[in-house]
Length: 426
Ligand SMILES: *Cc1c(COP(=O)(O)O)cnc(C)c1O
Image: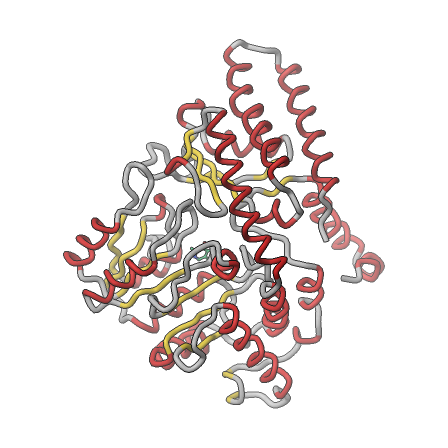
């Protein structure tokens, strides 16, 4: 990006751009859904592909001048099939969805009729808004039956099967935003198909892990797979739908003209570049390190007596129940932000508190791992999290002076910044 040009033409905006970059450089991003795309991916977002209107599908457009766009979209669709190793004759790909939520909505409206029943994981148990939450159109158009994780925080497939047989939904969704364990897509597929329901896998969070071979794939068990492209895949913000060939004519018209207009071709171009990057050995190594880092971080946190939902992690994220620490999720989020560690508060299964100030925080390793952080850094991070959350509480209890508490937070913030400087962004 030509920041010098922006500085010259729009100094005010340049300040915002550079301040946000600096914020990222100097803070530790532990938001499980965020990641840092390569410079190449970011450059492609400012290419001339931003201009073109190309409503329709490759070779079936409503505008002139789309010959290059057709090549672009076909190339990127092919790369999607390649990275998931799927049979190109059986599966079909749509790279046009603007983001994960509209992609999911298009699928639901394509396969179902309003009023039909959907079964999905409850939001506070790790599901996503777009999977039938009441505040989402997905929850308003359809009848929603939720399944839940058990008290230990694991999916209970027997219980899910029992519920599916009783409720007979037309579609079952698996694939979550805050579930730290592996998902058995094969079982979900069997459960759905035994009751003649569609099985939709929403692999927004774990798509990169699946490509890297560190999480089982939903293929060939799912009928439709959706994913965002900006999380573990490290692409631009966007989403993809992959479905069985025979479902194409139900789903694709809901993307366009159903809920979208012209595709964001600069995004599709950047996605194509990300999909080339994920084919490298470096990316495979990266995904292994994401999981390794999450496991180390969880072990360290357990040593500091943090309660982790499900007792650990198999993937890139950790869900902490802070009840025993005497701080709420919101307080913990704010305290950590004071030392430049960025996390998000999160509901935990069977939460006694309200979603706006729940009992948990969610932390993830993809962004820190992109910066090159490894075991040693994870141990430091766990140490700081403990210092900030546990120590802060005990300092409050013994009524340590505010100025002293401040000083210890300042000290940690300096250390976090020092660590971040050692792992620069591209
Ligand atoms: C992030 C996410 C989405 C939606 O993504 P947006 O691009 O924010 O709309 C959908 N499903 C799951 C499981 C997610 O984690």
